[in-house]
Image 1 (cartoon, rainbow, N blue to C red):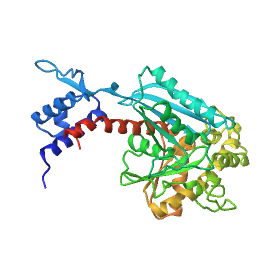
Image 2: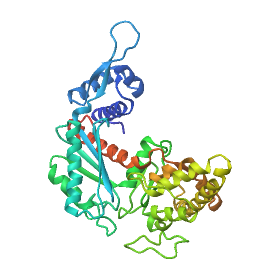
Image 3: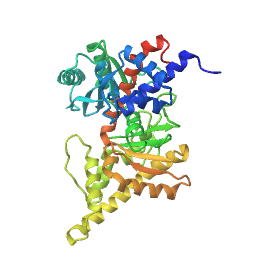
Image 4: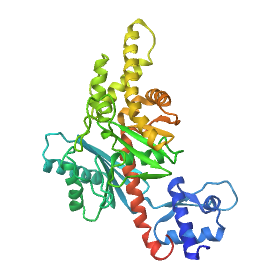
Length: 411
Protein backbone atom coordinates (compact mmCIF):
# COMPACT_ATOMS: atom_id res chain seq x y z
CA UNK A 1 0.00 0.00 0.00
CA UNK A 2 1.60 3.31 -1.04
CA UNK A 3 2.25 5.95 1.60
CA UNK A 4 -0.14 8.87 1.81
CA UNK A 5 1.21 12.34 0.91
CA UNK A 6 1.31 13.34 4.61
CA UNK A 7 3.20 10.16 5.54
CA UNK A 8 5.67 10.70 2.69
CA UNK A 9 6.29 14.26 3.86
CA UNK A 10 6.81 12.99 7.40
CA UNK A 11 9.38 10.45 6.26
CA UNK A 12 11.21 13.05 4.17
CA UNK A 13 11.27 15.60 6.98
CA UNK A 14 12.61 13.06 9.45
CA UNK A 15 15.29 11.96 7.00
CA UNK A 16 16.37 15.56 6.37
CA UNK A 17 16.58 16.32 10.10
CA UNK A 18 18.67 13.20 10.73
CA UNK A 19 21.04 14.12 7.91
CA UNK A 20 21.45 17.64 9.27
CA UNK A 21 22.08 16.20 12.70
CA UNK A 22 24.68 13.71 11.48
CA UNK A 23 26.38 15.64 8.67
CA UNK A 24 26.06 19.21 9.93
CA UNK A 25 24.84 22.15 7.80
CA UNK A 26 23.86 21.23 4.24
CA UNK A 27 22.69 23.08 1.17
CA UNK A 28 19.40 22.30 -0.53
CA UNK A 29 21.41 20.71 -3.32
CA UNK A 30 23.24 18.46 -0.88
CA UNK A 31 19.96 17.47 0.75
CA UNK A 32 18.61 16.62 -2.69
CA UNK A 33 21.63 14.43 -3.40
CA UNK A 34 21.59 12.65 -0.03
CA UNK A 35 17.83 12.09 0.13
CA UNK A 36 17.21 11.34 -3.53
CA UNK A 37 14.25 13.72 -3.49
CA UNK A 38 13.30 16.11 -6.26
CA UNK A 39 14.26 19.77 -6.05
CA UNK A 40 10.63 20.89 -5.37
CA UNK A 41 10.27 18.29 -2.58
CA UNK A 42 13.48 19.51 -0.91
CA UNK A 43 12.34 23.12 -1.22
CA UNK A 44 9.04 22.22 0.45
CA UNK A 45 10.62 20.37 3.38
CA UNK A 46 13.14 23.17 3.96
CA UNK A 47 10.26 25.64 4.11
CA UNK A 48 8.31 23.44 6.54
CA UNK A 49 11.23 22.86 8.89
CA UNK A 50 12.24 26.51 8.85
CA UNK A 51 8.67 27.63 9.57
CA UNK A 52 8.64 25.28 12.57
CA UNK A 53 11.83 26.89 13.90
CA UNK A 54 13.82 23.67 13.66
CA UNK A 55 16.31 24.78 11.00
CA UNK A 56 17.72 28.08 9.83
CA UNK A 57 20.25 29.51 7.41
CA UNK A 58 23.65 29.26 9.11
CA UNK A 59 25.94 30.38 6.30
CA UNK A 60 26.84 29.89 2.66
CA UNK A 61 28.42 26.92 0.93
CA UNK A 62 31.42 28.75 -0.53
CA UNK A 63 31.18 26.68 -3.72
CA UNK A 64 33.04 28.11 -6.67
CA UNK A 65 30.31 28.61 -9.25
CA UNK A 66 28.47 31.36 -11.05
CA UNK A 67 25.90 33.36 -9.15
CA UNK A 68 25.45 33.62 -5.39
CA UNK A 69 26.62 30.84 -3.10
CA UNK A 70 24.02 28.33 -1.94
CA UNK A 71 22.54 28.77 1.54
CA UNK A 72 23.60 26.34 4.23
CA UNK A 73 20.81 25.05 6.45
CA UNK A 74 21.42 23.70 9.94
CA UNK A 75 19.44 22.63 13.00
CA UNK A 76 18.85 25.50 15.45
CA UNK A 77 21.23 24.43 18.22
CA UNK A 78 20.02 26.78 20.96
CA UNK A 79 16.39 25.80 20.59
CA UNK A 80 16.89 23.57 23.65
CA UNK A 81 19.65 22.92 26.18
CA UNK A 82 20.45 19.55 27.70
CA UNK A 83 22.37 18.02 30.57
CA UNK A 84 23.88 14.57 30.99
CA UNK A 85 24.84 13.06 34.35
CA UNK A 86 27.11 10.14 35.14
CA UNK A 87 26.15 9.03 38.65
CA UNK A 88 28.69 6.82 40.38
CA UNK A 89 28.94 5.51 43.93
CA UNK A 90 31.79 7.96 44.55
CA UNK A 91 30.56 11.09 42.78
CA UNK A 92 28.72 12.77 39.92
CA UNK A 93 29.86 14.28 36.61
CA UNK A 94 27.71 16.54 34.44
CA UNK A 95 27.87 17.98 30.93
CA UNK A 96 25.60 20.75 29.61
CA UNK A 97 25.13 21.01 25.85
CA UNK A 98 23.02 22.55 23.11
CA UNK A 99 20.57 20.57 20.99
CA UNK A 100 23.34 19.40 18.66
CA UNK A 101 25.50 18.10 21.49
CA UNK A 102 27.96 20.98 21.55
CA UNK A 103 29.42 21.03 25.07
CA UNK A 104 28.84 24.31 26.91
CA UNK A 105 29.99 23.37 30.42
CA UNK A 106 31.41 20.41 32.35
CA UNK A 107 31.73 19.79 36.09
CA UNK A 108 32.08 17.01 38.64
CA UNK A 109 31.91 16.57 42.40
CA UNK A 110 33.16 13.72 44.62
CA UNK A 111 30.65 12.30 47.10
CA UNK A 112 32.17 10.23 49.86
CA UNK A 113 30.62 7.06 51.20
CA UNK A 114 30.06 8.71 54.58
CA UNK A 115 28.03 11.57 53.10
CA UNK A 116 24.40 11.50 54.22
CA UNK A 117 21.59 11.04 51.72
CA UNK A 118 20.32 14.62 51.99
CA UNK A 119 23.72 16.33 51.63
CA UNK A 120 24.69 13.99 48.78
CA UNK A 121 21.52 14.81 46.83
CA UNK A 122 22.01 18.53 47.43
CA UNK A 123 25.60 18.39 46.17
CA UNK A 124 24.53 16.61 43.00
CA UNK A 125 21.57 18.91 42.24
CA UNK A 126 23.65 22.00 42.98
CA UNK A 127 26.28 20.71 40.55
CA UNK A 128 23.70 20.57 37.75
CA UNK A 129 22.42 24.06 38.55
CA UNK A 130 25.95 25.43 38.69
CA UNK A 131 26.91 23.88 35.36
CA UNK A 132 23.78 25.29 33.70
CA UNK A 133 24.59 28.74 35.08
CA UNK A 134 28.18 28.48 33.87
CA UNK A 135 26.89 27.52 30.41
CA UNK A 136 24.70 30.62 30.43
CA UNK A 137 21.52 28.77 29.53
CA UNK A 138 18.09 29.94 30.73
CA UNK A 139 16.91 26.43 31.51
CA UNK A 140 17.33 22.75 30.72
CA UNK A 141 14.89 21.02 28.40
CA UNK A 142 16.01 17.45 29.11
CA UNK A 143 18.39 15.76 31.56
CA UNK A 144 19.72 12.27 30.83
CA UNK A 145 21.11 10.31 33.78
CA UNK A 146 23.33 7.24 33.71
CA UNK A 147 23.36 5.30 36.98
CA UNK A 148 24.33 1.83 38.16
CA UNK A 149 21.51 -0.53 39.02
CA UNK A 150 18.31 -1.80 37.44
CA UNK A 151 15.88 0.43 35.58
CA UNK A 152 12.26 -0.72 35.83
CA UNK A 153 11.14 -1.17 32.19
CA UNK A 154 7.52 -0.41 33.14
CA UNK A 155 8.13 2.89 34.96
CA UNK A 156 11.58 3.93 33.74
CA UNK A 157 12.63 4.46 37.35
CA UNK A 158 15.79 3.32 39.11
CA UNK A 159 14.87 0.30 41.21
CA UNK A 160 15.81 0.08 44.87
CA UNK A 161 18.99 -1.91 45.47
CA UNK A 162 20.76 -2.69 48.70
CA UNK A 163 24.11 -2.40 46.95
CA UNK A 164 23.70 1.25 45.90
CA UNK A 165 23.68 4.47 47.91
CA UNK A 166 20.20 5.71 48.82
CA UNK A 167 20.90 9.11 47.31
CA UNK A 168 20.95 7.64 43.79
CA UNK A 169 17.18 7.10 43.76
CA UNK A 170 16.50 10.34 45.63
CA UNK A 171 18.50 12.33 43.09
CA UNK A 172 16.00 11.75 40.27
CA UNK A 173 13.10 12.97 42.40
CA UNK A 174 15.11 15.96 43.63
CA UNK A 175 15.96 17.05 40.10
CA UNK A 176 12.34 16.83 39.07
CA UNK A 177 11.33 18.96 42.07
CA UNK A 178 14.02 21.62 41.57
CA UNK A 179 13.66 21.70 37.79
CA UNK A 180 9.92 21.21 37.28
CA UNK A 181 10.02 22.27 33.61
CA UNK A 182 12.80 19.80 32.79
CA UNK A 183 12.26 16.26 31.50
CA UNK A 184 14.41 13.85 33.53
CA UNK A 185 15.24 10.38 32.19
CA UNK A 186 17.40 7.71 33.85
CA UNK A 187 19.09 4.72 32.21
CA UNK A 188 21.53 2.04 33.32
CA UNK A 189 25.09 3.29 32.88
CA UNK A 190 26.30 0.25 30.95
CA UNK A 191 23.42 0.49 28.50
CA UNK A 192 24.33 4.12 27.83
CA UNK A 193 27.96 3.16 27.27
CA UNK A 194 26.83 0.63 24.65
CA UNK A 195 24.72 3.25 22.87
CA UNK A 196 27.73 5.57 22.80
CA UNK A 197 30.00 2.86 21.40
CA UNK A 198 27.41 2.03 18.75
CA UNK A 199 27.04 5.68 17.71
CA UNK A 200 30.54 7.10 18.17
CA UNK A 201 32.85 4.31 19.29
CA UNK A 202 34.29 0.99 18.19
CA UNK A 203 30.94 -0.72 17.51
CA UNK A 204 29.74 1.63 14.77
CA UNK A 205 29.92 -1.19 12.21
CA UNK A 206 28.02 -3.69 14.38
CA UNK A 207 24.27 -4.22 14.72
CA UNK A 208 24.86 -7.01 17.24
CA UNK A 209 27.45 -6.86 20.02
CA UNK A 210 27.92 -7.09 23.78
CA UNK A 211 29.68 -4.46 25.86
CA UNK A 212 31.45 -5.64 29.01
CA UNK A 213 31.89 -2.78 31.49
CA UNK A 214 34.95 -3.04 33.73
CA UNK A 215 35.27 -0.24 36.27
CA UNK A 216 34.69 -0.21 40.02
CA UNK A 217 32.16 -2.95 39.29
CA UNK A 218 31.17 -5.08 36.32
CA UNK A 219 28.21 -4.95 33.97
CA UNK A 220 27.22 -5.81 30.45
CA UNK A 221 24.92 -4.41 27.77
CA UNK A 222 23.40 -6.42 24.96
CA UNK A 223 22.59 -4.96 21.53
CA UNK A 224 20.87 -7.39 19.16
CA UNK A 225 20.09 -6.41 15.56
CA UNK A 226 20.51 -2.75 16.41
CA UNK A 227 18.26 -2.78 19.47
CA UNK A 228 19.33 -2.47 23.11
CA UNK A 229 17.83 -5.36 25.08
CA UNK A 230 16.77 -4.70 28.69
CA UNK A 231 14.98 -7.91 29.65
CA UNK A 232 11.69 -8.54 31.48
CA UNK A 233 12.85 -6.79 34.67
CA UNK A 234 15.48 -4.49 33.20
CA UNK A 235 18.27 -6.79 34.31
CA UNK A 236 19.81 -7.93 31.03
CA UNK A 237 23.58 -7.72 31.44
CA UNK A 238 23.84 -8.05 35.24
CA UNK A 239 26.93 -10.15 34.63
CA UNK A 240 28.35 -9.50 38.08
CA UNK A 241 25.86 -12.09 39.38
CA UNK A 242 26.94 -14.71 36.82
CA UNK A 243 28.04 -17.88 38.68
CA UNK A 244 31.55 -18.77 37.49
CA UNK A 245 34.29 -21.16 38.58
CA UNK A 246 37.15 -19.82 40.63
CA UNK A 247 35.23 -17.71 43.15
CA UNK A 248 34.87 -20.15 46.01
CA UNK A 249 31.15 -19.54 46.38
CA UNK A 250 27.94 -18.47 44.73
CA UNK A 251 26.27 -15.07 44.45
CA UNK A 252 22.99 -14.35 46.21
CA UNK A 253 19.90 -12.39 45.20
CA UNK A 254 21.21 -9.36 47.12
CA UNK A 255 24.98 -9.69 46.70
CA UNK A 256 27.07 -10.45 43.61
CA UNK A 257 30.03 -11.58 45.73
CA UNK A 258 30.82 -15.07 44.49
CA UNK A 259 29.78 -14.21 40.95
CA UNK A 260 31.81 -12.85 38.02
CA UNK A 261 32.20 -9.60 39.98
CA UNK A 262 34.50 -11.46 42.38
CA UNK A 263 36.88 -12.13 39.49
CA UNK A 264 36.63 -8.93 37.47
CA UNK A 265 35.62 -6.15 39.86
CA UNK A 266 38.16 -3.43 40.65
CA UNK A 267 39.07 -4.82 44.08
CA UNK A 268 39.59 -8.31 42.65
CA UNK A 269 41.84 -6.99 39.88
CA UNK A 270 43.96 -5.02 42.35
CA UNK A 271 44.32 -8.08 44.57
CA UNK A 272 45.38 -10.14 41.56
CA UNK A 273 48.00 -7.55 40.64
CA UNK A 274 49.38 -7.55 44.18
CA UNK A 275 49.78 -11.33 44.02
CA UNK A 276 51.95 -10.77 40.96
CA UNK A 277 54.02 -8.12 42.73
CA UNK A 278 52.50 -5.12 40.94
CA UNK A 279 51.41 -1.93 42.69
CA UNK A 280 50.30 1.51 41.53
CA UNK A 281 49.17 4.67 43.24
CA UNK A 282 45.59 5.91 42.91
CA UNK A 283 45.06 8.77 40.46
CA UNK A 284 41.99 10.98 40.86
CA UNK A 285 38.60 9.26 40.62
CA UNK A 286 39.88 6.52 38.34
CA UNK A 287 39.42 2.99 39.71
CA UNK A 288 42.71 1.75 41.10
CA UNK A 289 42.40 -1.33 38.90
CA UNK A 290 42.55 0.84 35.78
CA UNK A 291 45.88 2.27 36.86
CA UNK A 292 47.22 -1.20 37.64
CA UNK A 293 46.20 -2.51 34.21
CA UNK A 294 47.53 0.52 32.33
CA UNK A 295 50.87 0.22 34.14
CA UNK A 296 51.03 -3.52 33.41
CA UNK A 297 50.40 -2.99 29.69
CA UNK A 298 53.20 -0.41 29.60
CA UNK A 299 55.61 -2.70 31.45
CA UNK A 300 54.75 -5.72 29.32
CA UNK A 301 55.61 -3.75 26.22
CA UNK A 302 58.83 -2.28 27.62
CA UNK A 303 62.31 -3.03 26.34
CA UNK A 304 64.50 -5.95 27.42
CA UNK A 305 67.08 -4.17 29.52
CA UNK A 306 68.10 -5.86 32.74
CA UNK A 307 66.16 -3.27 34.71
CA UNK A 308 62.89 -4.03 32.97
CA UNK A 309 62.94 -7.79 32.37
CA UNK A 310 61.57 -8.70 35.81
CA UNK A 311 58.86 -6.05 35.69
CA UNK A 312 57.82 -7.03 32.17
CA UNK A 313 57.59 -10.68 33.14
CA UNK A 314 55.42 -9.94 36.19
CA UNK A 315 53.20 -7.62 34.14
CA UNK A 316 52.77 -10.22 31.41
CA UNK A 317 51.87 -12.90 33.92
CA UNK A 318 49.31 -10.57 35.53
CA UNK A 319 47.69 -9.66 32.20
CA UNK A 320 47.51 -13.33 31.23
CA UNK A 321 45.85 -14.18 34.56
CA UNK A 322 43.40 -11.30 34.17
CA UNK A 323 42.58 -12.37 30.62
CA UNK A 324 41.93 -15.90 31.90
CA UNK A 325 39.40 -14.50 34.35
CA UNK A 326 37.66 -12.25 31.85
CA UNK A 327 37.46 -15.04 29.28
CA UNK A 328 35.38 -17.13 31.69
CA UNK A 329 32.63 -14.51 31.71
CA UNK A 330 32.98 -13.66 28.04
CA UNK A 331 32.78 -17.30 26.97
CA UNK A 332 29.52 -17.70 28.89
CA UNK A 333 28.04 -14.68 27.12
CA UNK A 334 29.25 -15.95 23.74
CA UNK A 335 27.73 -19.39 24.31
CA UNK A 336 24.28 -17.88 24.93
CA UNK A 337 24.19 -14.89 22.55
CA UNK A 338 26.81 -15.50 19.84
CA UNK A 339 27.27 -11.71 19.42
CA UNK A 340 30.28 -11.89 17.11
CA UNK A 341 31.77 -8.84 18.81
CA UNK A 342 32.47 -7.92 22.42
CA UNK A 343 33.69 -4.51 23.58
CA UNK A 344 35.86 -4.26 26.70
CA UNK A 345 34.71 -0.93 28.12
CA UNK A 346 34.90 1.15 31.28
CA UNK A 347 38.07 2.56 32.72
CA UNK A 348 39.70 -0.88 33.04
CA UNK A 349 38.74 -1.94 29.52
CA UNK A 350 40.15 1.27 28.09
CA UNK A 351 43.32 0.93 30.19
CA UNK A 352 43.90 -2.61 28.91
CA UNK A 353 43.45 -1.43 25.33
CA UNK A 354 44.22 -3.65 22.37
CA UNK A 355 46.71 -5.69 24.42
CA UNK A 356 44.15 -6.98 26.93
CA UNK A 357 41.47 -7.34 24.25
CA UNK A 358 43.75 -9.56 22.15
CA UNK A 359 44.60 -11.75 25.14
CA UNK A 360 40.93 -12.25 25.96
CA UNK A 361 40.04 -12.96 22.33
CA UNK A 362 42.70 -15.69 22.05
CA UNK A 363 41.36 -17.43 25.15
CA UNK A 364 37.73 -17.22 24.06
CA UNK A 365 38.70 -18.76 20.69
CA UNK A 366 40.10 -21.75 22.56
CA UNK A 367 36.97 -22.03 24.70
CA UNK A 368 34.24 -21.53 22.10
CA UNK A 369 33.61 -22.57 18.47
CA UNK A 370 31.73 -19.27 17.97
CA UNK A 371 34.10 -16.66 16.59
CA UNK A 372 34.00 -13.47 18.63
CA UNK A 373 36.09 -10.38 17.98
CA UNK A 374 37.09 -8.60 21.18
CA UNK A 375 37.65 -4.86 20.87
CA UNK A 376 38.85 -2.25 23.34
CA UNK A 377 36.70 0.81 23.94
CA UNK A 378 38.05 4.14 22.79
CA UNK A 379 35.55 6.04 24.96
CA UNK A 380 36.39 4.48 28.32
CA UNK A 381 34.73 5.97 31.39
CA UNK A 382 33.45 8.88 29.31
CA UNK A 383 31.09 6.58 27.41
CA UNK A 384 28.36 6.91 30.06
CA UNK A 385 28.21 10.69 29.79
CA UNK A 386 28.31 10.45 26.02
CA UNK A 387 25.48 7.94 25.99
CA UNK A 388 23.40 10.00 28.43
CA UNK A 389 23.86 13.08 26.26
CA UNK A 390 22.88 11.20 23.09
CA UNK A 391 19.76 9.87 24.80
CA UNK A 392 18.79 13.30 26.14
CA UNK A 393 19.28 14.83 22.70
CA UNK A 394 17.13 12.23 20.96
CA UNK A 395 14.32 12.59 23.51
CA UNK A 396 14.42 16.38 23.26
CA UNK A 397 14.38 16.31 19.48
CA UNK A 398 11.48 13.85 19.45
CA UNK A 399 9.45 16.23 21.60
CA UNK A 400 10.47 19.34 19.68
CA UNK A 401 9.49 17.67 16.43
CA UNK A 402 6.06 16.78 17.85
CA UNK A 403 4.32 19.93 16.58
CA UNK A 404 5.15 18.81 13.05
CA UNK A 405 3.60 15.42 13.73
CA UNK A 406 0.34 17.07 14.72
CA UNK A 407 0.29 18.87 11.40
CA UNK A 408 1.11 15.62 9.60
CA UNK A 409 4.68 16.59 8.73
CA UNK A 410 6.37 13.94 10.88
CA UNK A 411 5.40 10.41 11.98
